[in-house]
Image 1 (tube, rainbow, N blue to C red):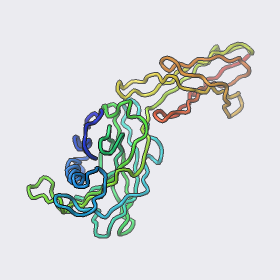
Image 2: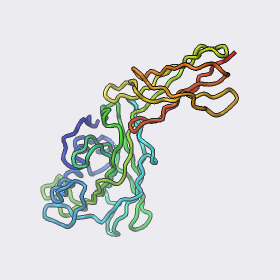
Image 3: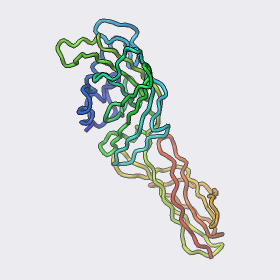
Length: 309
């Protein structure tokens, strides 16, 4: 299990992920994230900045690997939306371009795409996949890579303050037969390519929205009261809590038609409660529609039918 990532006092990329490695990762690769972190720390010590490209070979530092990253996509360009308990796994894809002499098929060659919240040098949180991405050559110098980002909100991996925009970083490390645990480990024979920001994504708190229009049935011209609740995942309690002071549209779809039209805008109150009144005019469906925010995705309630006599 990975550790809970509160405000992380870490130095450099991969510091957080190096602390705890998922079992699947450890079993599936000869190279652990701790091994990678050891090499990257050496690179950062020379460059003076996490995520900076290594300018030239220097003593006690890995050499600059001739590799780059492009065409990065996380979850197909959609936000990562996490609830209170269920694991969320989203796909990542990117293109790895490398020199012809870089052996990406080697057992000790690793490439990864991760996302982080905050600054790269001192991130608030990191998320990554249980397994390293796999890269399929499309030419002698280009490979198509696929991986995942695995999120476990039920294990305390997220704080509510982590919702919003995250950055993506990428790295490739060629160990070239060097064993990081060996006494004669020579980091200068290890190649590293690392980019602090190759893209962005959003990590959002799953939202729910309900509606109830009453009375049912109702006479034409009489008052209909439409209630509802807007809630979203609280990652710190693993429960859903009201999303207050949010603008939510009340919409109506007349029976026999296919389109909802806006009726009015309602502000969510205590515990995310919604309440308003309208005059009964025709048979049809009422629903609430929330447009979403940076931290919370859009959501629409299922329509509630009202029979008007």
